[in-house]
Image (cartoon, rainbow, N blue to C red):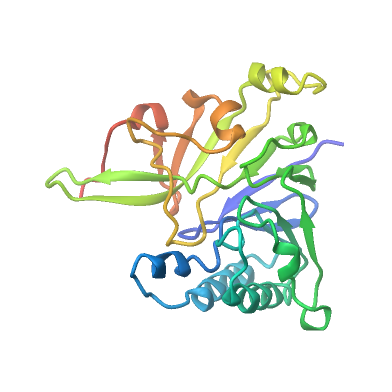
Length: 271
């Protein structure tokens, strides 16, 4: 049966609505508890969990999804679990689960996330944990991006990943002022590279999956400047299985900036 999949970014938010038979709201890289890393560096900014939760719930209310998909790195601190993690992560998940079931794909920061799930009476819907290899939902592939994914994901027309926190460096045409802006990256899979890694896959170059690299939901995260002259993409999908020349860049407001190859070095912000 032929499917029609619609991908609709929420304007000015790093969140994506995926519509097919069901409607999913997708958010990547929450990094709850990242403030602890700043404290170690002498910067005390206080907990940002409530602000993140408020933004996430605003996105949920705007999308009215059937399911919520958290695309890895829900928590930040590794390998230990902090006291604040034990309080904030279950609370955050329980609050989101009041609106829809949650599918949580494990990221490289989520090794012990199973120990931080809310107690059953505290949540309205289930929280389902998915492995680092990712999973298929409603004919779309989802994985964090730090590990080799299951070959099954390449049967989907789209694969969504996080992990890189993609950004672009904007430079003023009138001064040396620069700023980093979060962006969406759309790219085609490299058919030959995918077939070499997964010889059992039945696919053609014509129907090779497209990959969306999602921006980090937590604005405090660093990220990869995709238009940097020297960039190191993270994870096997981004670094080994994509056609770099096909990568397209979009700002969160939907503005198409261009292809990554045309933006290498610096991008004029015209400010």
